[in-house]
Image (cartoon, rainbow, N blue to C red; front, side, top):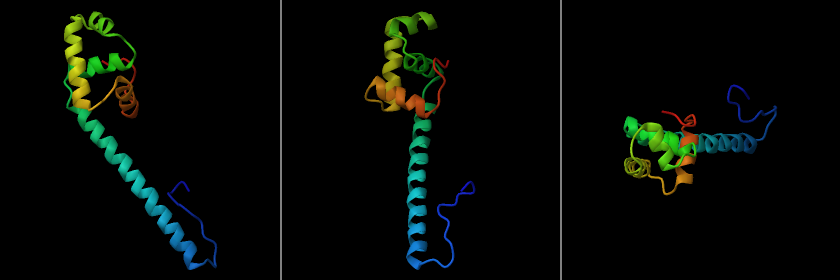
Length: 113
């Protein structure tokens, strides 16, 4: 199984057993490729963020409020709101919860700067 085996067939085996194992392997491969494609798209969106937007995203998904992020980065709360809006738009996140899930998929450390 470590080498990627999907099924072990003992001889003699029925043709249908072999076909079932092949279809299962194809289904698993298709699902894996879809996940990899989605993750690659997510990484592409993250890479489109500016360095400051990445900082803001990391602090926001760690649970900090806008005013706390502003204090941490030495800027105004309004500026943080603007950066946060850019992050949400560029990451195509509909909510903060969705942005947090995206950060988890990207395996960003909490509060990454």
